[in-house]
Amino acid sequence: MRRIPSWIRVPIVFFIIAGLIEYFVDSGDKPAFIEQPAILLFLLLVLLILIAIEAIVGSIDNVLYQSLDEAAKARYDAKRNAPSKTVQWIGSIYKKLVGGKPIEEEHEIILDHNYDGIKELDNDLPPWWLYGFYASIIFGCVYLAKYHIFNGDTQFDELEAEIAQAKIDIEEYKKTAKDLVDFNTVTVLTDAGDLNAGKAIFETNCVACHKSDGGGGIGPNLTDKHWILGGGIKNVFKTISEGGRDGKGMIAWKQSLKPSEIAQVASYVLQFEGTTPAEPKAAEGNIWVNEDAPQDAIPTEVMEIKTDSVIVIENN
Ligand code: HEC
Image (cartoon, rainbow, N blue to C red; front, side, top):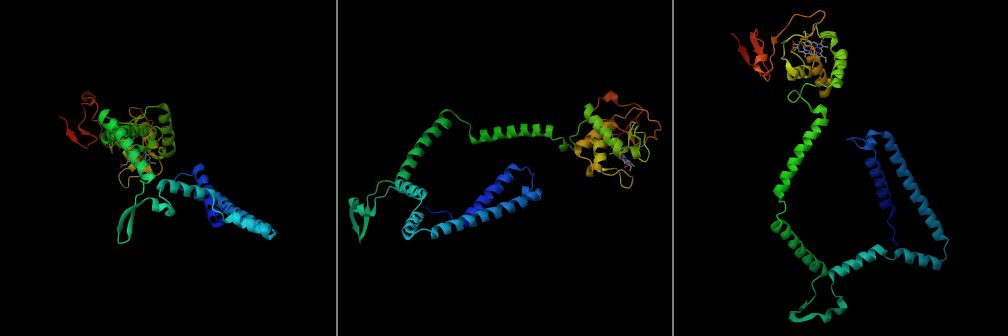
């Protein structure tokens, strides 16, 4: 049997092993051997071992060959150089598919024409062509029946169905991927788990300036109805994520908090409203009224109303 040369076999086996490792080791976006240098070492070792095996098998082969007598050597060479079974099999399939007459039998099918010595053979249609033709007829019947008799989905229908499904999938995904929220999509979280997480974030990061009861210090009082940068979950989310006005001391927290965490702490901050802190800082900013809230919820003493869209209404 003719053998695959070792310089092809070694890389093939090596890349199969490397590919399997890549497939089974969960390494995120990066290749496994970059994420985990130990794998690189392992692959180097595998490569060395493969080369060593090749070298050992090669030299054993050689030693055994040298120990053979002449007749055995000849038999061995003959066997080695005989075409492999696979090659023979591919060859015979090819012949069957082409279906040509061997050159010695061409005289049986030669036609009577002779154009300046150019003659014509009356070959049968090659089987690959003929069966392909039959297959396309069967395909044509099935196609006709499916789309013109039974009105199967056209490509437009399929596209629409896929888009509809994709929209559903995106909604599902957004529900699980909490970090996709931004100030446009954020909603007040009411789950006790989220609020506790928000409280923990507040206690670690914010109490230095806002006090743990939200009464305010360096930062403004968070318990009153007044907001400098706008109240409501969207504005509060935006302030925490993007920071306050320049030079005031409220940094953009999006560097250190995930969107889901900002949503949690923003929801927690909104809980302060209406509570009475120990040392409340004087109110700053304007009374904020939710545009979406029912009309009668707007307090009548409001002189200036700041809304999400920064519309200022004079009340009289
Ligand atoms: C270094 C002090 C400091 C820290 C820490 C701090 N803030 Fe502030 N915060 C401020 C200041 C100052 C302002 C006012 C910004 C302005 O006037 O633009 C502010 C404003 C705000 C506002 C808007 C208030 C309004 O009236 O519009 C919110 C909400 C807020 N902070 C929440 C937080 C949260 C949540 C944290 C913790 C993740 C935090 N802050 C951490 C100083 C701080």
